[in-house]
Image 1: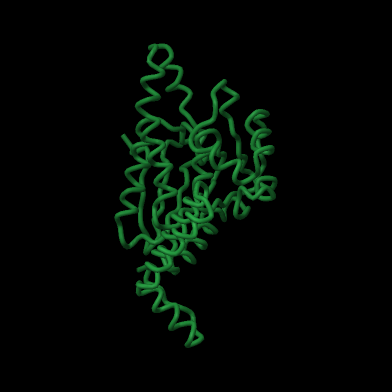
Image 2: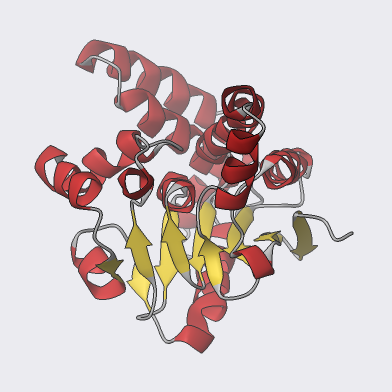
Length: 263
């Protein structure tokens, strides 16, 4: 039986692949656990300096596994089943935000429901013109999940987020780009190439400083101004003690491109 999620590293770039292509990479216990495991292994691998997250087949992720839900309803254990899966999936989504390395979603197909939330949690999103983003949850009578209510209003504002959730209409790639939900829209056969190009750029950057920046941005969503200033002061002080800071300052003075090691 094939793994629901697998990952590989080429140079300093890791690629995590959701691997339930026949089911449009919908989320179940195995996929949730596999995603969390892959992210943790990428976190622990010091050679990894950027991560690409994509789906195998025609979809990034269609969201929750409807067949799983139907079976759980028939067995009258839908609530225990969700209570088992959701903490694992949520831990994986939180890890995307907390991993001190950039994460790029390469959207090879639809991102719906939980797949939409998963994409929103990433730092960058590359998609083809054929990709649709769909909130999906209310289409099956469920309230939203998978970080979507946290990130979507922050991307598009409360009014637009409310419309997208309640009307549940697919958002085409070009519209999503205009809304700021996507980083770039490229031809279908160029999605992974564009994601890798971006990953290669980021992998040459000051990885530890990227991690501190992600942490600061996460904290800014709940901090007061004074709390954020305190966090910034602590973070930049730590940064100034790193080899990458010394290299960055030296390169600036010498008028050359910095050669960061990620430390």
